[in-house]
Image 1 (spheres, rainbow, N blue to C red):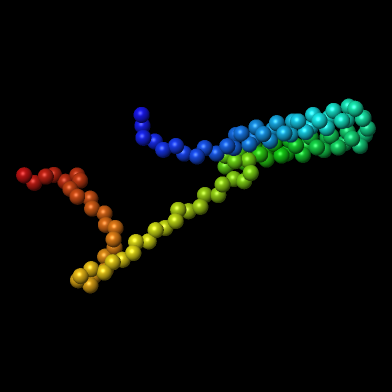
Image 2: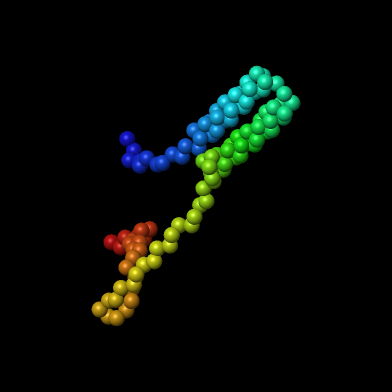
Length: 111
């Protein structure tokens, strides 16, 4: 078993499916009202709502593809810069706390 830490998985796909299902239910309900009470103004209302629902689903799909969320694409912020605090040594020379030591990597050993 590999020692991997679980990462947070965004639920953009679930939100997209919810958006599609909600728009289908709303349009079918509005079409049922149109079938029960047919009129020209209700027909235009149904067609406008279909166009708006289609635009909403397309927008949710684009945002899900772009940022894996249907609300707002995530903006990648630059990583915060960490500054190393200088320390005072006995000789009065300022040195940083973090020092990289490469050791003898890649060097032949002297025997």
